[in-house]
Length: 102
Image (tube, rainbow, N blue to C red; front, side, top):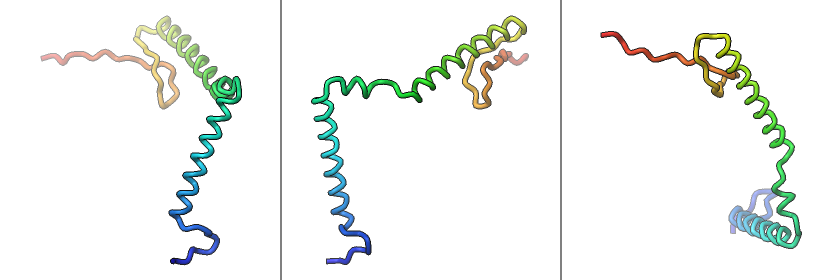
């Protein structure tokens, strides 16, 4: 039998088996807890504060895009669309594709 490195009480195969067994037991306990606790699934499905902030931010950006698009259409003869931009632009101009003259 080989000697384990210092600080390692179990060989790697044994460690993996123990971790897999612990994970299986944790899942079983979580499932039993969810089944035995009325309303537990409701509390788990509530959106987190981060999700709430992200949703509010998306709504704010959508409102900004709409306002920018209306302003651009009212004050320009060009055509614009709303589009996510890696540079933070809320609207992008659309250029028509012209057929080449022969």
